[in-house]
Length: 346
Image 1 (spheres, rainbow, N blue to C red):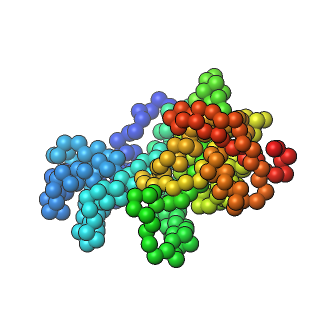
Image 2 (tube, one colour):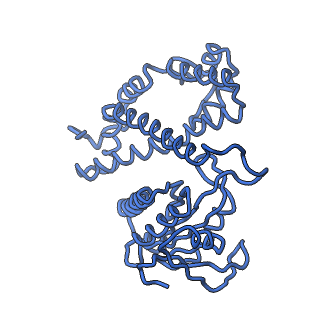
Image 3 (cartoon, helix red, strand yellow):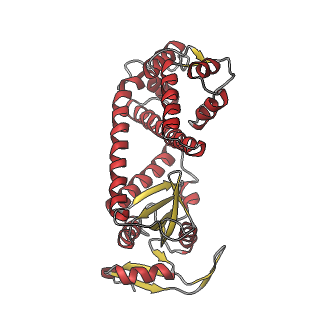
């Protein structure tokens, strides 16, 4: 989508461009107020306001003309599904929030990727690149929509496969209040991130972070794990069994070793977690985070319980107990360093 003509002096977000963008993506102009939408759907205004806020979008005054016919159709489908499946308010809001949170980040990521492309490819300044993206985003929107729908379907198939494998033969839900999912949980944290990035400009910092995140995701996925989230200078990952978790952790330590531009410290814990909001929670996550702080660059640390599990189920690794130490928030721990047997590191 080359910018045939970009005038840096032009007023950004011209009304004609924005109108064309809205009508193409929303299927028509905004012609309705929130009160009118509520009347059309025979719904409570506050319910609609809640759904809209949960999507991460502002509602504005009740008499502001902010809604298109497509908004009414989507809200009608949501209310119908809520009633048909007897969804609780909590479940309904959580489903809507999952869409809002994910698409907010997704769209920002995609737009920034296009801005970066135009800046690099055509030598535009940041403002001109953003104007060019605004002018041309509808050209690529159909492709991004198809990719999003296909990726969503593939992810549903993938998680269904994991559930079938893990729980297909189960007849009970386990003990009382224990967290439901047994997982290998790990962190990889860039060593001295603040020092390494302090002198970088915007472009260099973006390149630094993007390169690390992209490569880390590739390593995690190739080893059979999943990235839960990235947190600036760290990656939180999970795997379904200790063997896969071991491969992910050792793979990250190898890919980002002491000679790498972004050396990392890695920790891995086998334990039970709660999965909510696209994130994972539990003491295993907290322990992994704390252990990461104790690791040396390019190495992997385990807690003693995880080391026992790995020793019994994962061949080809060397487990080396470390000195006992005080870990803030966790008390006295004796970490165990893990390495591959063929590394010659005992």
